[in-house]
Image (cartoon, rainbow, N blue to C red; front, side, top):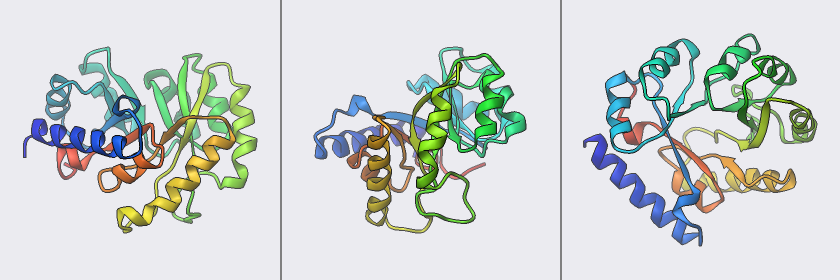
Length: 216
């Protein structure tokens, strides 16, 4: 299928999922996960109206950011290394993977206003980054003191290998945590489970394979 037909299919599914939860489709930000994809596919998606792209590696993203139009919102969705946080904060609009205080300290040095999500390891998986739910309040308080890194909401990557419906409890828990810290922005849901994520309150869904096909 072409990117055009893939995007049309995804938008239809977003509309149906939102309506099933009494939400407006316009509340959902589709982040096209373009990591590992060639520039030509990003340009094609841009021509079809996509303005939010997600990248996970700074060095791969930089030439894309330089080559693409300036009205794009670039989302950093990879593991955030503290020693790269300042540079990442200077070129991305939003970072989805804050989970340590040193990252906030370094990103603030960029003196470039960015939005951020706190990554929560909602299933307590040892192989994944993200804070434990009980650590949320402390990091949230630190972010509220930052001058340039603006807290937007919470993000999670659910356990791999589960059916979409099996993800629902994890998405529910993240929404509950978001409500506790007073945020309506929630980044959760990917190609295989974004409809359930939308039904459970996602404001940002991160979709790669369902748009671009398998990673290059």
